[in-house]
Image (cartoon, rainbow, N blue to C red; front, side, top):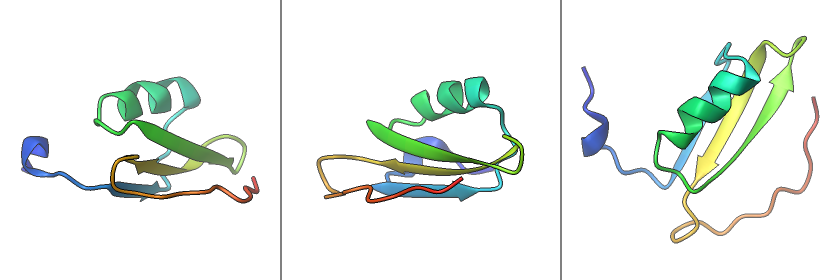
Length: 66
């Protein structure tokens, strides 16, 4: 089992999460990232999550496609 307190990443990308939007927001808020975006795919079931921390990551989301 991985202890999340030992993990301190600046960027996290998760694919095919199969989590609804309400649960997505709840889970993401518990992971310690100050910023996130996600994409709904395949009838709002399959998702791609992108999470990042501002202090270490410069970013610009240029475009998204569903």
